[in-house]
Image (cartoon, rainbow, N blue to C red):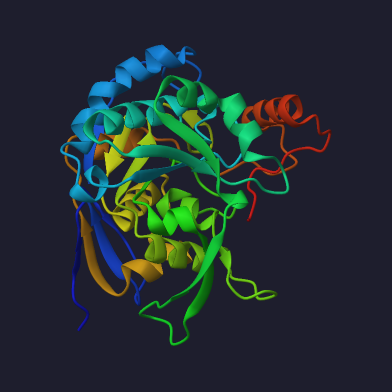
Length: 340
């Protein structure tokens, strides 16, 4: 008989298939109480200073006392979801105001150097994306720096997963292995359907460690979260994308797999349909407790839907194209999801 797995982040059960695990969702969440316009049912506040001011206390309450792994570190790497220059009001990227509030809190609670990291790809440079989204303002105002992970040396490591007989050779940027890592994904799906979450946000920054050998996106995400083992994970659901932008006005923290389970539930997905998440949960029954917010009410309010087709003229696509063209000068229509 499979053992039950208890995760740190009680609501309704998420039904799983016969050979999967059951998940009862109930994480440590703190509502932000921020009113915004733009996303459905809210009023988006365009001024980043105003958004940050409203987020500082919720972030302080959410994180609480800083763990020794962060407090004693020389440097902390913060990894937001900045895969593309979507406007933060779409919910498709981590709101830089959330990262600003996180760096403010960590800067006051630790003496660590703070690094906000992302990766350039074939579509657009990280520096350009970060500049347009407003991350350069955070760098200038707070004691932190922006860092392009694609420019640094990688280490090749071997990752073992309990359900696989073969190990995985992975190439990982050194700063994700040597520094404590704080990962802050936004609540959104990837193009294939599953939640982007902690695993896939980290998976964007690693590659196969064997030249010429490809690793599937799901396997890469699993290997990444197991290799990097983030010290702090925060799900930015202040503004989410769930078929349309939506102001969920909530932040969550907890174990990586717990947060991905919560994100999957909020987006109306079945964990069985997520190859990476179902494998990490494993067989048996997994419970995920949520405190600090009315999770059932939030889940009922979040719209259901995925990313629009690449050929669609959905407003999120139009916004992304306009930002992309402005930043990169490229006339090629943007891709919603880049499989790095």
